[in-house]
Image 1 (cartoon, rainbow, N blue to C red):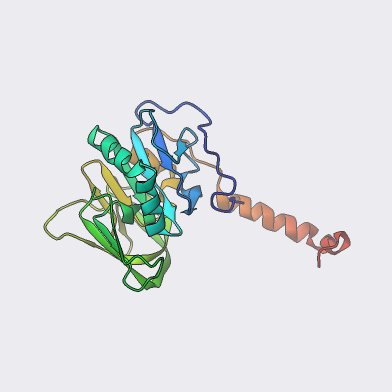
Image 2 (image 1 turned 180 degrees about the horizontal axis):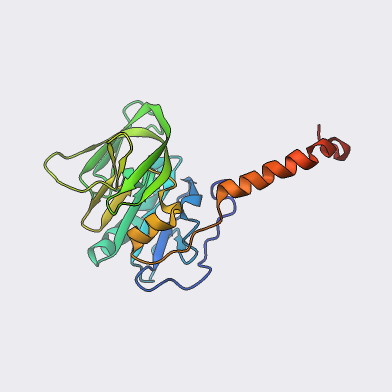
Length: 239
């Protein structure tokens, strides 16, 4: 089973990065859905500016986007990310991280904090307004490169693009709507689980990435174990 968010997060790279894919993932105080990046065993999780060189910088999901955005500025990572992007690094944002890449996040109803607005990193011409309605759905989508994958959305907020700026979406959903933004070495998406697909990650990072263990198979094994042994749990004190 997946570990709960960041409780079992491995913050050090387990092996050397593939050529051209040195990766840093920002470890927000309120990071969520860390299993999005379980394929990236070479990645460093960082909570402060680093002197290391990276080809990719990832902003993951967040349980409190505005608070983590302000933290990003407070520890110097916002300026560090902008400088690294200007030097050629690619920046990727998932869900809350996607919202942070835009020009501004507004919270007029106080969904996340008393702050009604916070400036984003300004890497993409988008603005997000946090709303009380939470978007939760499972989807099937296809990337620009033709890779079809399963993902899911779980977020508050409506993100609006500047109509004067043209950009490619990250993916097209089965219903014909599009998700995300790709332009000028910046990619953003609301779709959790996309980068758990080895084929999607290979397209994004431009390298071969082996698949991880199949979650469904693991869940099936767990179900079979309970089916066979569940009747004996009461003998161990489980009611």
